[in-house]
Length: 319
Length: 319
Image (cartoon, rainbow over all chains, first blue to last red):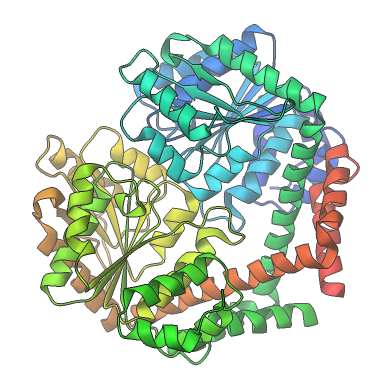
């Protein structure tokens, strides 16, 4: 169905959730109208503060996100949540307790909650998430919280491209090790040890301190990622998280780092769109038969995959 | 360091683990010698049976993988494990019990265990995993078990490209829902409910049956994914899993489906290599300054990301 894009954009600007929802659906569906949408949004975006929250399943990402939303709402901010975590209650399959916490925000017109379902799409999450963020940004959200599970490669990458990345841990044997292996310990600007009332919280903070090498000497202007303790289910420590986020944002602005991060994020977005376009062109130009014929020769052992890729690329740039 | 590729390949063919390890390191490091490696391996690969195992964290993937390896070893097969699961003990950070189970295989020359660490690489897991499988295949492994966590987008995709995909679940509230949301319920050729001695196993099997719509009418030649109950920690049900795998393999061969799957896998591999090459060319041609300049205009709102991507692609195909 063709949408009236200028009207949708105008309505999204007014904060109408249905217009925002339709625009994001155009992103998820890789609509042919997306170019028109993105051209209309271009002058409007760039104002929101994008916070990534990631961590292993079970550390309390959704509860923390919800508490963070409450804190920002108390400060009068318009907030959006983009959940790309398949285990998140924000993505639809909540346990009862989570649903209750969510429904509190669901009735608040200053909060927009959206889950991403982009499985199987050509460019995947790397393609869709930044464009969905752009829609929420242009719609006038002050803060956009992007919640991703800290396990998958694409998911960790998305979290790492926020203005500020929050890495969530919880006490428990081996949790720090798992986080380290998943590569999420490298991306945090702020670390949160949630469920800090449980046994082992001190050990987790110590372990985290050790892994982050916080004892090492740093330059005077360097950012030292703080470790904040929370009990998100009771809202404890959330104000300290917000404070840490604001400090990081101020530090980035002071050192000209925020603009650099946003340029890097846009560069990644542009590159992903370009690569997806090239991929589509590979499929269109040759039909899939050309690729299938090359693949059959690879399976038969007549051709190695690099030589086959060379043939594909050559066909593309000739055209 | 330049490697003597023909010698490495010859040694890998003899099953020398250090040669296999070096070849996979060339893959992981995106070595310039990779073309030479893949050209040398091309005529040798295509014999191994590739089994993907995926499931949410905590369902017992590693224990099941280990038990499966034991079963195939008893049948005299050479087996490789490729672990792309950051939470897997095969990837290095095992709890004690898992280390013990692993070390049993570590001393067995008929078993090759390798974890993938490809974070941050240009093409990522989608690029590296199929090439690592190709190395293990050419090295003469009869069975290659690819263990991935069923959470991330790239990880689920890898599991779905095996000859046979095993989806692992365990009793527990919401587990089936989480699996469904992660998209892994759609990719299973064989379903395994592990920890079947626990409460709720019957409910999980029922729920799974329901979700899979096994009651629906199917064509007489269709594959009906079986649901196998296991207690992997005690080796119970593992023979039944092997039997289900062999049935699926026989069914695929009978219906000409195995060749089709392998062609699809090779096509995906070729396409990923081609796209990665194009991406590298984008970076090389323009230097990153061109992309950065476009990204800055996107951040400033002067250009939308699609128009920027058009400029990138135009520059690429002109050259």
